[in-house]
Image (cartoon, rainbow over all chains, first blue to last red):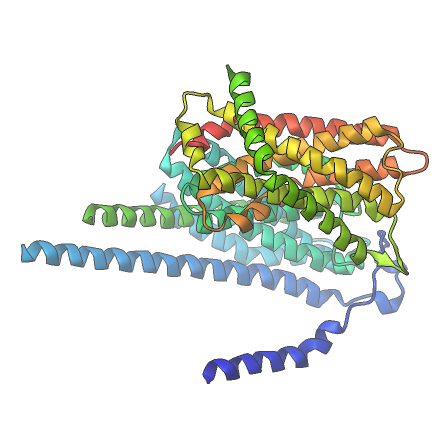
Length: 93
Length: 220
Length: 225
């Protein structure tokens, strides 16, 4: 029941989001044209792109470090569990 | 090596905190203005990626021909970092390109080679995870082949038209606009230190995993 | 000794293939159906794009080659003959060369069928400079097969071999397809640009030398447990 409603929800979201994907940016030029020569309509604001680029790098680094932390935690937990089992086994004997 | 870790961490963190100050103070480039500032993170990302690929290739060769298991650990850590820094470069590049060139992507030598290297090393990671028995050696072969492929890919795609600024941009910048040289060198140094730091962390993780495997085997 | 072993492996594969012709026929018809759907995909106003001929030829070779590689080594794995080959007192790189030659011959037969077919369907003058075209095809096939044989041999024991082979092979052989397609396009121009085609053949030649050497070098440590 849950699975079916989940599938339905995904399909609904995809259908509603389809027009967003259909909107393409206007076709750019194929050669290098300095910014000053582009028509004003083509000129994008630079700040969001710049901020986006730096934010991506920072976020990426944070996510990566967190993932190393998590994996290290898992390995250490496994090691502790193993050691506990080892000591329990030896104490039984 | 362990003792260097804490000071390295502090230095790298400090450099990264100070970097935006230096970048904001750097002079504007005449044709691209503000968006060119992505350059200070974009090119160092590629420098770090090529560094990681170099490390991976060398360690893969050592692993294949000398059978040192520690080399395999370093190689896989380096491959993961190559994918990470390559991802940074591949995202910051189009963001810069969209504004500077008007298009998200161009099939010129530099971009295509970079995308290809990224794919090859993603393949490396996939093989290590899903490759089945003997996949660590196959991954090592992929690392070596990937590194050997770089000049060929570059040369073959270079014969097409190119829009990406040629390598000469960097030396040109350093001589013609000395104001840009300092922040660039600073950021490059920061990224290289970051690469070393993350490599140390990641190899440490691999080392722990190997120790865990040993414990499991000893338990049998 | 080396050459003898390589030729023995080749003869073995030939003998098996001649009997059943399974891989040959299926690869050929897969290549043909590839050309067909690519042609349809690139049709504009009822006629296929003429410039697409070079690309479609090489794509069909690559896809058919991937399948052939997978099937050849699947057969080895099924018959457990790979382990027998490795146990034999033969230099391991010679086994690699033998398998490589087998794949190259198989793809050469496929190309003998594909090239005229593409020339026909696309009205492309692929045979205006037949020697250069043949040189391009031979060099490109050797390049593709050299890396493919190595990877397919390594992936033989893996569960995910069918999908891992293209994932690993295609990015690695990008220079081959660039050289092949651009060289073929150069030959399709009017008049055919022989200098450019020769340049691409030379590039492919140097790529082949480097990668066959690398493959010979790494085959031994790779196949050892």
